[in-house]
Image (tube, rainbow, N blue to C red; front, side, top):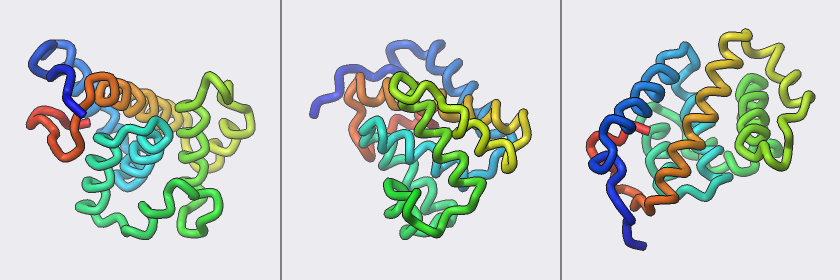
Length: 153
């Protein structure tokens, strides 16, 4: 696979805005472990090798267990995720696949016992942000393990 272009070098102002959104979402109060699970799960759904590599490495560095990362694609059958994580992963799938799911009421309602309304907004922006990063990395053929120094997705 050959990269198509370096989007950070090509459109630095736009990418700085994207990085600003990334930093804001990261500072929203959602726990780091949940953020990395959501980013990894959305990236799995989208088939973004670059982001799967980046976020599984970040999760491991932050103390996430390899077993939970290995089971993430089958999280519904794995007992190692909390109710909060399960609700977030279901919402991640619903919004990542929104053209098919239409964000079902049951997935939204499952969030309410585990997340405040501001956290639901933060989670939804997290999901939107990782989906945008996936589209950039896939569209421009970013190579796993070769993140530009300024790429903080």
